[in-house]
Length: 429
Image 1 (tube, rainbow, N blue to C red):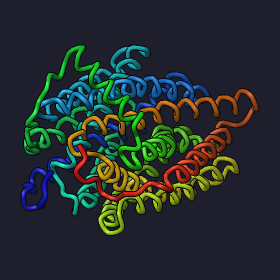
Image 2: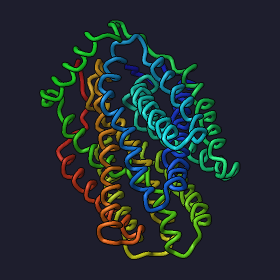
Image 3: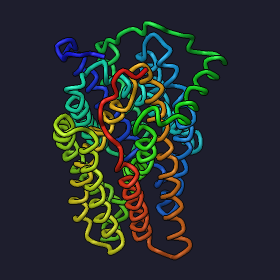
């Protein structure tokens, strides 16, 4: 692992950061904003939460199952970069198919594209040690988060510039932008070659990797705080991933409940999204420096309290039909919290990870994140469906109840994470 920042070329750091911008273009443009609107247009507002929740959950289920295996494969391979390149190209190609075919083929293309994106994110996170040192890891991670959220400006801005009527064209434009901003990472981030490569493919590799993962989970006490962190991460990422997936639908429904038209509601949702992004950019830079100063665990504790306040306010807007303008305050709080979550989350995982098993452990890290991304949308779909169909609640009030459920998940995660220490792992293999 690098011991001096001077040993890491600046263009490698900049290129790694730029990939964060690239994949955020996809996550914001496709997952958070425009594909959910496409689903709503296809199935109607009352079915959109349920349908999109199921679609997202199925996509996450795929990557949940294969995350540990993918991580173990990268530990065995000479380099991780080829895995990142292939997953990115798959995501880009599948995204170009969206809305160019009928409903179910488009849904299938989205499911696979999102799974490829999530796999790439896992490979990308595992490259953090190649572009940072223990002393500046929080700052580099925070810069990645901050610059990454600029990709959200690109995604939302593309929708505002090109319009959202021709979604097939918009989805293709987003895919191309993802690829263009990803290329520098492929070219300029140079990995140290694995000195002990092993066969990457084959039944024997699957057996050995699965056995290693099971052994790690059974012997969690060998890695202090790891299992507790991973369990706690299930709960807070459950809430956060769900918010990212449904924020546009929630904003549009609040706007309509306030008397706006669907079109005006979508425009207001994009404006509020840009507001949240602005604060996420700032949050990434600020929280990243705090990580280096007080440690990733104490930083994450503060971020989770901010999420508690954010969910309380968001639930109140839905339950009491507050004016849509109140969402600007929610957006600013959520943006700052988003920037802080990923700035602290990645360095904390590395503190708990033995250097020789980064791929495998980031596979577990990714697995629990994907598990939360399965459960969260399913939970949201269930709560909103019961609220609307079972209790006759207006859509926006049912969503307010859903936000309260997400709040409870964050509170649970805080209790689980209390004993976790961020003391660096030294000499573990």
